[in-house]
Structure formats: structure tokens, C-alpha cells
Image 1 (cartoon, one colour):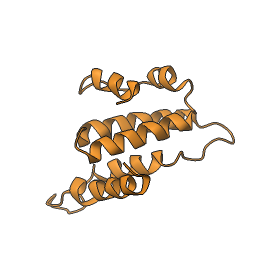
Image 2 (cartoon, helix red, strand yellow):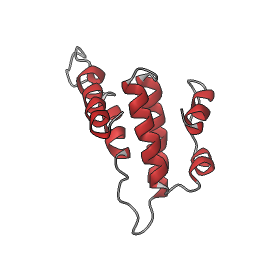
Image 3 (cartoon, helix red, strand yellow):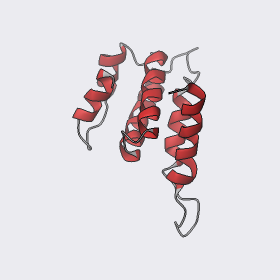
Image 4 (cartoon, one colour):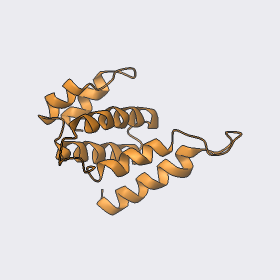
Length: 122
């Protein structure tokens, strides 16, 4: 596990990643390589059952806020595969069935993450 992910886990379930945390680990808010590497690690560990959905969704939301803060004139393309991972976890946040009987994590997040991990390799 990367030092960054160890740091995030040590913050505990209510710990939030701040922009200062990202700068500490990435060097800058617009370091797309950092976001991509973190997202791929999160996706793989979630897929293999090492991390929970709730943890991963929270981390990806915090990183998304940092990505947006890193946008500058001429540098606002979304980092990939970071954005794919962010979207996969975001998809699990909302029920589509009005009665809430669906399981958006199992129906949407899990297959999207599995597809990405299969494409990227173990």
C-alpha cells in the first residue's frame, strides 16, 4: 500500500483529505500523475476487498475537490483514469429506483471498477 493511502487510512473514518494534504503528497494540486496513481490503487484495493466502498467514495470525493482546485487556464482536462474511478464511486451514491430497492454499488460501482481493473491489469 502506498504511503499516501496509509496516511489517509490513519486519518480514520471521519478524516478528510485537505488541499494541504494533497500538496504534501503530490507537490501541487495539478499533479495529474498523483491523482491517477492514487485512483488506480484505490480501485484495485476496493476490487480485491481491501477497502470499503464508503472509504473509497470519501477519498475520491476529497481528491475530486483537489483536482478542481488544481484547474488553471489551459490546464483543465480531467486526469484519466482518475475521473473514471471517481465516476464509478459517484455512481454508487444514488439510488435510481424511486423506492430505493436497487443497489447502486453492486449494480454500477462494482462492475465499473471490475472493468477498469481488468483493463489495467492486477
